Length: 171
Image 1 (cartoon, one colour):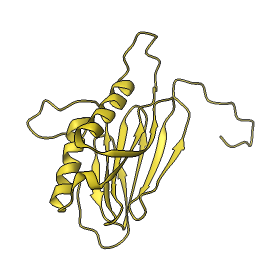
Image 2 (cartoon, helix red, strand yellow):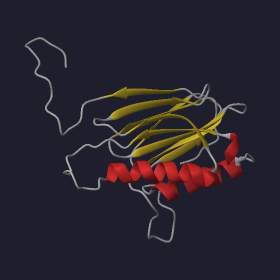
Image 3 (cartoon, one colour):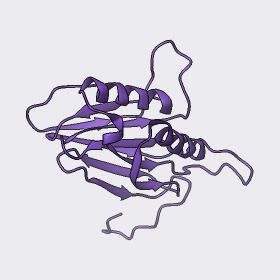
Image 4 (cartoon, one colour):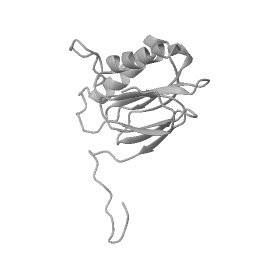
């Protein structure tokens, strides 16, 4: 999803979504094992975010942002369409939490997603200025293109029991 924006707008990304906007855009998402990549141009106040679910590329004939390589390719195409160069953008990486126990010898999608994100940053020559990767539990992200800030709120993993709440308490 891409739009020319002249007034403030809030965008929520679901898995497999991406968005690119200007200084009046704020992008939100919630992650588990998925990865969000933010790209921000500090001088022009342009940027975008993708929320991919799986490493690699789609086997489809069209790009599919559910896959990391395709999601980054879509963002980079928009960067070029804006007349800018991808290496002028700052990158931040989030997600890749182990949401489910895969055992001591298992290869989780989360770990493969993190590895794919790091490889994609190297492939595009992007400088990663911040990372919040791995661990357990979900992350809620808020990306303000006006200043490039990304706020992260961490939650509990589904694989862990929730803390008990006394009557009248707040979780």
